[in-house]
Image 1 (cartoon, rainbow over the protein chains, first blue to last red):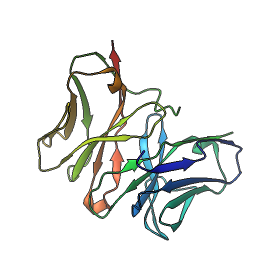
Image 2 (cartoon, rainbow over the protein chains, first blue to last red; image 1 turned 30 degrees about the vertical axis):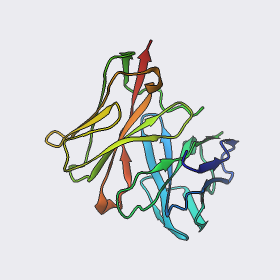
Image 3 (spheres, one colour; image 1 turned 120 degrees about the vertical axis):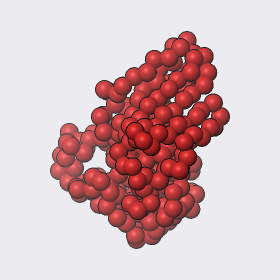
Length: 114
Length: 113
């Protein structure tokens, strides 16, 4: 998975609790992305980062926040988890999102919100 | 592992036959089109891409065809093998939109021995 790890790989939590997912890369790539994958929707972009402390919203950003304090780590936070955020979350990286570049994906995190 | 989807269109193909996976894309201004393969429990894996000014591109056992007139993309897999069983996604990217990927819904390919 191109030097990308995600943690945790599985998590079950309750509605209203905060949750943070971590993506860690060893490729020193500038761009990092968070996607969610749901049946019938394919992958949808939540947030992305184009550098340390530089982030922007994607297609489905409501209810999520992100932070990137180091090149290698990109955190996705659900401030107050809801059942609609039950999904599989994938992190991706690319060398330079300013021009088309292949995105490499991590192994995913399955999140269940009860 | 992580499930991809419960209601994906499915293509069943005999081992050794050729597979053709189709995708209709949405934005005629997209710059690149990409095919990803996702095996059960794993993240998507890049297969091949094609730039919008091309009609055809070949890789190892795979060919991507682009028909801009009808906004249609296809992936052909030659001599399909059991390891090709997976979900296949097409994606498009637009430079003016920051090169973010927009994914299609996916097609499940099942290879029968």
